Length: 169
Ligand code: DAT
Ligand code: MG
Image (cartoon, rainbow, N blue to C red; front, side, top):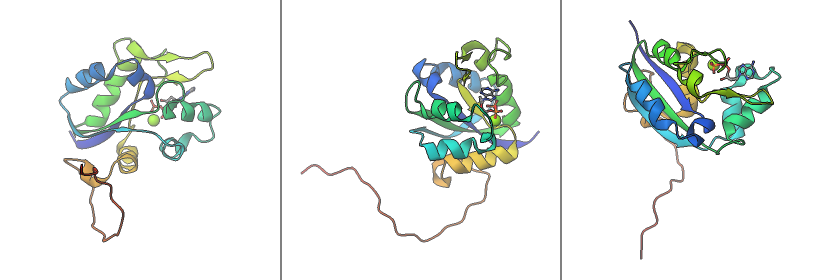
């Protein structure tokens, strides 16, 4: 039994199909908690970095277009979950990568599909192991965006422009 955190993405097809509520409910049944959440417009740079281990695959370009939302809507819901054995629990709930092979009771089994051009529209992403979870969470979130974080942080003094809501005159 191990304290872990994992990155979950509700991909553009999941958002367009209004599956967010169902997915959050299924994930709330396995005793893990959300420690970070935000809606993200995925840039090509972020998509390619997230899937960098699949660069050589013939489906890479289509995968990048899909996760950037070219076929659905240009956003994903990014979540960090924390708890005991979180990585395995979440992977079991979402099911196999190929939605045709995923158990019908899993999220990908219920809601995923393969398009005519071979894109696995499999609704959700979840980190595969602790190393990937750390890499992915650090790619998608800043430390202060998580209410509980198990990775060490450090402070740096930086000057930067910040945006505020414009005051009404
Ligand atoms: P997972 O998302 O289950 O961790 P992965 O990391 O191997 O699977 O692949 C990332 C994504 O790439 C996956 O969600 C869908 C896509 N993909 C993987 N294998 C594929 C294939 N053979 N054909 C089309 N898309 C594929
Ligand atoms: Mg993976």
